[in-house]
Figure 1: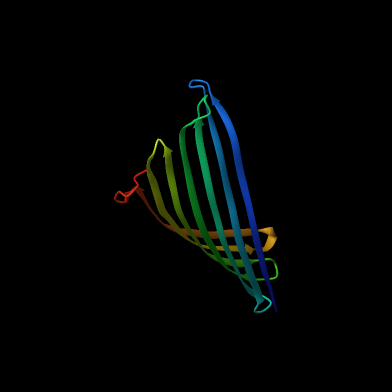
Figure 2: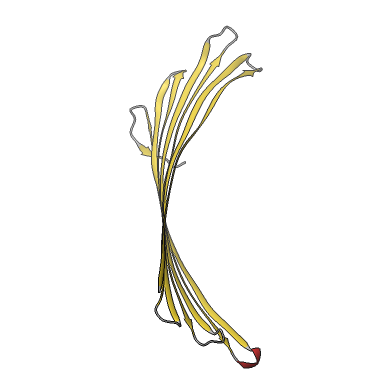
Length: 212
């Protein structure tokens, strides 16, 4: 006897934020004008699959698999002008930033159960292996229009990987006269690997590492 399932979900969304404001700077009798827009497009794929097989009346084994793929991006533009009381622009700059995030999760579970007797005694075992991958690519530009200055360029990559392995076994044994013994063991092993590299360039100068 066997039973199985399969599921797939897809999500696609695109949110945005806009800011249009003017603030008075009382100390200089100037106004700060800001215009900004940020978009957040995102896509997600999720797949799950599982099967449970009864090899006989006492022993069954099951397997479950999960996969999630996420693509989350953002793009922002921010413009700022400083305007004096004569309605002249005395300062102007802008910034643009882009982020591309990709994450992948996989989960694997193997479960087995053996029925020792008709009184309810049983032995179970479960093995889990999960893996996470995350990548982020970022780039940004800072523009200095007034007073004029060379554009600042920046970019970088951030990577994270994590592996988790878990094993668990449990034994429940029922004796006569309502006596039950329960025992078990569980262990988890986890490992991570992280790296980040960011760089800066001002105008036509040499690119250098960003220590941030």
